[in-house]
Amino acid sequence: MGAVEGLGQVIPEDSFASNIGIKVETFEKDHAVFTMEITKFCLNYYHIVHGGVYFTLADSAAGAAARSDGRKYVTLDSGFHFLRPASGSRLRAEGVLVRRGRTTCLVRADVTDETGKLLATGDFTYYCVEGKP
Image: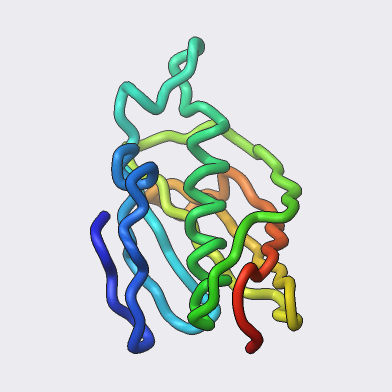
């Protein structure tokens, strides 16, 4: 993935995300879009995209939206809903800030396929581990 500039700041390389093929499409204030190609390594025993792939992509995009204020965050809690299996060859996750507090923030993330069909959705609560807004 490499470092990505946006909002006058840089998203540092995330070796885990990079190794599974996650790419940054959009990074702006309170909003991030990440994508990834569906490969054979994403498939589970039933030959459909593993739920952990959906969750990881969503958490990565939501986490970037949280970090768009320049501070560092860790995932505190999440509620995630798997709606349907993917079709096609590409996944897209969009993280949008819902509310930012002094030490926590809530971000909604949707995972869609290349046609825009909603595959999964979730809410992620992040805890700020440095600084004040």
